[in-house]
Image 1: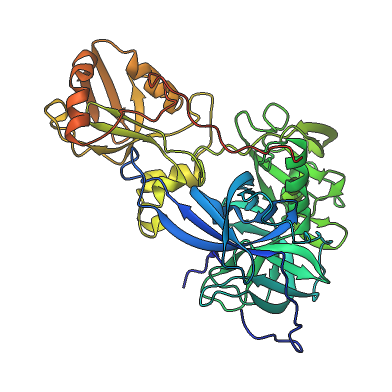
Image 2 (image 1 turned 120 degrees about the vertical axis):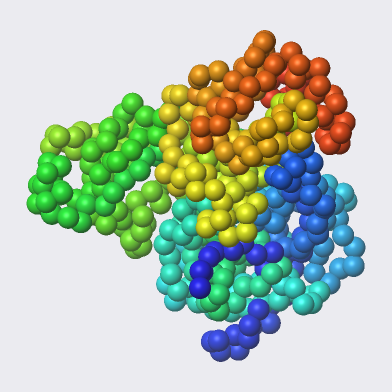
Length: 496
């Protein structure tokens, strides 16, 4: 059985003692209408769907919930406990990395005026009793379930595929509770966001350090992204490996295997550098640090409360010589972007050939994609790195049959190796070069397939192909030649 973390739109009877009777008026129900992109037909969207989640009042007209509750949302409503009427809300700011979103009630603006906002509490400790509060499916009224904190460590957030600090609780989590608060001693000590599938009573919540960093970042107008070091490392539990890399018997750390192009460490760290400390915290040979003085977990946990543009100090050893370097933190930029939200997929229809950027979203169009997606694509996803020559992978996803592309119908679900002999740097570069091309253009796929087209003829027949297949435009707005710009990602806006 494959066990995975899954976000939930979020009750068991209490395992410890008698359930306390608390009304929790600050816990609100969220109704979301969402419309996800269709990566099989990237020029269109899927049928709108409805879902529910939970949220908590944290300020005047402001609600805190999970990012996946409102991802790709087109319309949001909120409802108070035991109240028949609903109010309209909008997303004020969202951090898909940490699965948090801030909502603002817009109509009526005084809808939450009679509710006292909840207070954010401290980091819970192991065995602390907590209450998960929300609106799980199966009823209309609020549900309260109790449990204890059973684990505190870095986990993979299924919404963003980022590895961040999370708190595990043994209270059952069900669909509808997602985005709802977890209370400890009357204060919010987490936001419920995912559970482990195939296992009972193992749920995760976003902890206070990440919540506080998100809200503080919104107030300061910071980008709602969690930075990355931009490196791949290996643990140093082997004594001979440590000695060969120049470490003394008492020294510990991790060795750098790869430095991402244009990442935070680009030009500062090198392969085989050993990182012995981060942000003043010693790194053990198993790649962990003692976080907040209590919890041993992955060394990059310190990035969870940092912002793009912050600086962080690393202590390293290079060829046996100790050094201290300072990095300016940048966003995580893998060769194959992880899940994206609130933005359309990048596509380009050229002579009936449909090109897209390879993303995790496209991979998930295969059922059990980690086994069934093309192995070439999976290799890019798991082992590929950005380089000066290639920042994205452009793929040919389908061939819309037409006279101009006869004989090319078998060359779909392959990556573009070269365009006129040059590796396309990214989708923008690829579209720009094709749009400005004259005469015969040659596209080579990674299987060795050769596609040749007359660029002038493609321009003439493009309207015919678009009309035949009911495609409104030949490319995503914002790509070269579209005449429009891409809609901006939702950014953090300053709080009043």
